[in-house]
Image 1 (cartoon, rainbow, N blue to C red):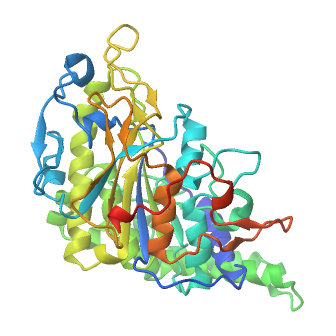
Image 2: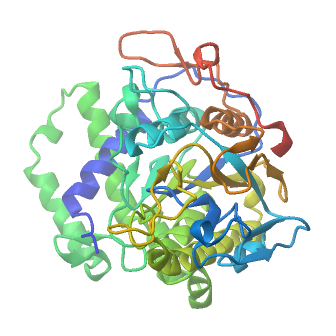
Length: 432
């Protein structure tokens, strides 16, 4: 288990994120939109498309391994892996893209392409979460104390999510383990520290902060101080309770699964319920070069339980129609199993074709777009590039892809520079 973030790290990260809200540039207009928030379920490492959303039961054991069973969903004609029975009951709420492609097999580059829609060219562009934070944060009417871009539990570290937008638009990473008390403060679980003790620490800090009492302060320092106040309000006020899953009914927590991923899905629902524009669940453990099928025995039931409960819960609360949910990794895995040592039944990186699940926020349910060939090795019809999916999500959010991004050197940069993107089909019209 990773350690929880310390009090100092929490205050510093929250203050920087809040400062981003206070200092956000002005003048970025929005179009009308159907979606208000996004939950990105990032299958970090790349999940095997053939073992999840695009099974190939007739390809033979060298391709399926022991995962050769499929299940009919509640939408006639759509089948998925038999290891995902709860998601099969929710197929009318989501759609599948079975022809995602970019052809890149390196984690860093594939992650960058999938989350920015751009081929690396020397300029580090912001990912979709940072762009949504820019347009849907304080300038888009967001008034919450929680930063507008949250990652559960830690950033990928594959690339700088904010790119040239800078630290103001980096995600706030929760740290810790959502299936346990999420914040740890100097080695002590935060819930075990009384409100009085927290207040006394705050008062001591204020007494020793001579600079804060100076009458003449720059606007930057004043903004930073206000951000610090917002951070304390998040800890001591009602906003911070969004991370306290003890407020949920025990049976609902059990439904999501008492795993780190399952409880992360529940936290994500609580965050969008509070109006947070962009939430990423960074779901690790899919980079299965070795002993792939042993890992899948654990990962697939976790994914099935957590994601299906998230979709049902959002729907029950009337939030699914305003919340985009998209689930994929940076690529798929090699369809043919590598049985030889040292892999012992592993699957390697595969960017030629992979799958994505999308739901809510204006996405139709019960639709399959594109197809791979009989063994899941190539796109057979309707290639979908990452930029196509991102453009569709931006459209649902009402973010103009031609809107300008603030560049530190004043360069003319757009949300998506369509004129310079060669591999692009545009908005996925079958899904919206």
